[in-house]
Every structure is written in C-alpha cells, then in structure tokens.
Image (cartoon, rainbow, N blue to C red):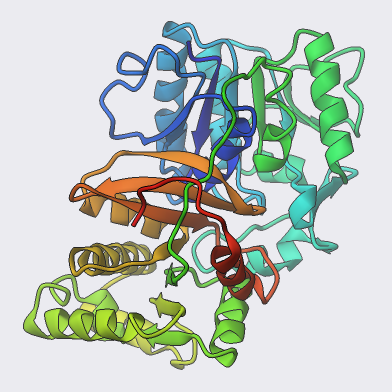
Length: 424
C-alpha cells in the first residue's frame, strides 16, 4: 500500500529524496510522469511512490497543472501523505507547485522545511543559505536557466502564487495558519523535531522540502522492510556531466588534475541532433570507449567550460534559444551514454543533472528507477537493466559536494566489498 507520494521536479531530486525511505527497507519506486497510471500499476507492497514531474523548467502555469493532476490522482487513489520535493537551492516553480498541492488536495496548509543541513543548506529567520551565503547571492542565483531571485523563502513563493506563506521558526505553532508554513532548520535535529511535532498534531499529510526533511520521516510514517543491500559495482567510474554548476566544474577540474581522462564535446557535437548518428559520431564514441577502458576515472562533459562562449555562438548560428540549448545538450549526453553501453562499457556511471538522467532513461526505454542507497550524501546508487544486463547508475544534482567528490567516489568503489553475484 502506498503510504507516501513524493513529487519531484527532476529525476536526480526524485532519487536523492526517495532513497531516504530505503534506509528502513521500504519498497520504493521512482517513475517518470509519462507512466500512464502509476497508482493503478503499483506493486501491492509498494510503500513510497516517487514521481518525477519534470516541472523544473516549465512555465509556472504548466507546472501548476502538472502537479495538480498528479495530486488529484493520488487523492483519488487514497494516498494519505504527499511530499512535494523542492530543490535544495530553491530553483524551479516552488510557489506554483505548492499552490497546486493545496488546491488539488483540498488541504488548508502545507508544512515546508526547505533545509538540507548535511549539504550546507540551512534556513534562518525565513532566509535560505547555501554554505553561509544567502541563496540569491550563491551559485544558484547565477544559474543560467532558473536563477534564484530572492533569499527569502516567503518571497520566492510569492513570485508565483497568492497562497499566504509565513515563517514560524523551528517550532510548530499552536495556532496553525492556513497556507504555506515555512520552518527554519540549521541541523538534522531541527528537522527531526519538526517532523515529530507534526506527527503529534496529526499533521503529516501535506509536506514539502528536499531530501533533508524527507530523511526525518521514515520512522514516523511506519516505513518497514528488510533493509537496503547495496550490490557489488565495477570499480571504474565514468562521469557523464551535463551540469554547468560551478561546484560541479571544480569537481571535474580536480579530478582531471589527479589524472582523470576528460572528454569535452564540442559545441557542434552537443547541439547538432544528428551528430551522434553520423559517421563522425560513431567514430568518436568508438574512440571514447577504447580510451575509457584504460583508466579508472573518466569524464564526458557537455558544459561550456573553457570555451569562451563558443556554445552560445554556435546556438545563435543554429537559431536556438537557451531552453533549446539545455534540452539538446541533455539529449546528446543521454544518447552518448546509451551508445557507450551498447558498445560494451564496463563501469559504474555517475550522471550529474536530472535532465541528462531523464534523457538517458528515455533513450533506453525505461520509465522507472529503484534507488538502493547512497555512496555519499546526495549521491544515489541505483541499478538499471539494459539489453538484459544490469548496470550500476549513480546520480547527483549539480550544485553540491567538495572539490574531491569524484575522487572520493572512485576510492569508495575500489574499496566496496562484493555483496551480490551479478552486476556489470
């Protein structure tokens, strides 16, 4: 029986939040919104359903309608708790999506704790911070696709919605207001205390936040099961990166300085939708698979680092706007990964960015993933089947982690003990 529905705005967010419930062994599934009826098709033992609504880059009105329809279907299916997963950097359509959650559910309030203290995202007096910096002044305020325009959580909601939003600190108020109730949190203990207070008040019904708040919920919602078992995975790590976040770019630079193979697609390669199937595309990917076999850490990236704006100039020649650029790069990167698998890639694959992960899944005809556990905070391990073989897929959002994250992940893979017989 589905105890909880999580609605995410991209696939990496769906995974890093969904995996929080796997810590208690709950049976969970992450699916794309394209699945016809995930509630009717659900396994009877399914406890947590995560739907990737893909609303991050939508217009606010379209995001509202998408979330509204999912919530209505959940209510009709008898789901008692709905969690609107939001970006820990507060990007996307937060105001319109929380409004849709309230309107479609018929509820009067949603409890919103946006912090993720483990990754340096905290909320104080209603202001959201990234590693001590107000979010609008951080890398998220410079995002090329959806920059965060304010550091006040209430203001971010007000940009897209007329729903009242009030900040209440770290305690659940005795007199609960209607609308969006915003909680401060600077530690996991704050989040756990808020969740426990909500349970005591019978208020674990409409919730919102990122993986941080979600991690406080499994015990309170009665999640249970056999517990997670991480499979054995290949020691070689291939990073497929479509993210332009400066934090991710520093991680790529550090890995390259330590000897990682780094392959950067040219503007023409990543923006031409026909390139991958061309003779040149076939030749390049064959060369890449040969190069990857000889190293323990390889990177294939489709961002704009070190090219002096060449991608945007190429896009202008092709008549492409920023949204078309974002879409085509993710399609190319997902296609490159699919091609490498078809050529016999033997590696654990880390995909950064939800757009790239979704494009890859579409290429291989998959609409769901099963998150198994975390190799590091926010780095989720899943297993996927393609051409009757199982592959280990790691996923993460672009904007977090130390500069050494990729190197640390490579070291973890080399130390991991074998727990299952078959993985490739």
